[in-house]
Length: 430
Image 1: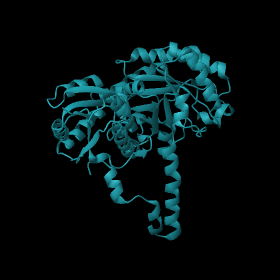
Image 2: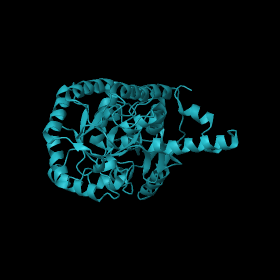
Image 3: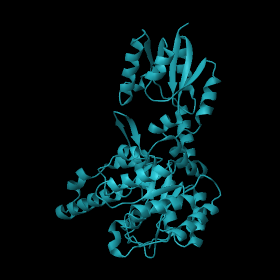
């Protein structure tokens, strides 16, 4: 009997999957390959069902004889191990980044005379149910835990800022096809700078937590991806513990607080505007109080160290970050206003010599020549693109306003504007 191999990334089985499995079983004995959580998360949403349960699910199907775990989108390794006579796939991978994977499958099968059999990919009414199931990702208990789970299965997460519902949808839905595969953002960063700017307010913690919570709710109503909140200094310890519980209950995944005190001023101004760093003892107390207030293990408190910004040196940065971890911080964010990534690289190398596990978070606004891949190679786990949507929106809106004033009409501004139809397709329930 011929040996047939077919690979799945799905965590929900519908009629289309059963149909193609039935056709595969007619060709021979079927081995189903199940992609790992890490691989699925690299190009789709994080699986609703973990790997071991997905394996058990396919083992229970009558058309499947064997189940194996496939640890990469590339089939080469698993095919050379199993040497199947036939590989079955839908015809939806003829274009896009999967076309390269398809070609490698064909070349690999040639080594022993195997063949690729493709069946037409059909959309089924069940996919509407799958879309509804995707909505489960927006539930607080599901969304809150996903950042920590993603850190466990991806070497480096890509995070982009959102400051209202429409920018949340952009971060949620934007994806690109690259030679390495499909890329999308893993999470959202809700920045105090962007939140303040969108409201026309200065970035000095003038926008209070009640208003920040409304922004979060606006974003959460239309998105599913995990959210990291910029918590500035965290405020008074007594206030911070209540805010932690509120954010945790809402489904926020993490808050990042910085080790400064007094009137908040943007870090990129540096030491020249009178910014004062908190004491190690007091900041550790705030972290410990926040962790003690949590109700679940899911929520993360990340400590942002300003030592490099305030020119206190690498030794001070390392001493502080190790102390913050001992106090309970779930990660450390090392901030820098350098035009190159060198001092961040130096910090990562030194920090990793003593701590191989604690997540390192960076915001490469000023040293944006560094790629996510390069930062990940130095031990970085989360890269936050912290303010680029609002910074790109401002000049575009300003240019449109000037065009209308200059011409006394809006026709000349059309080329700068997205069509109403495109806007409507971006919005939910249209």
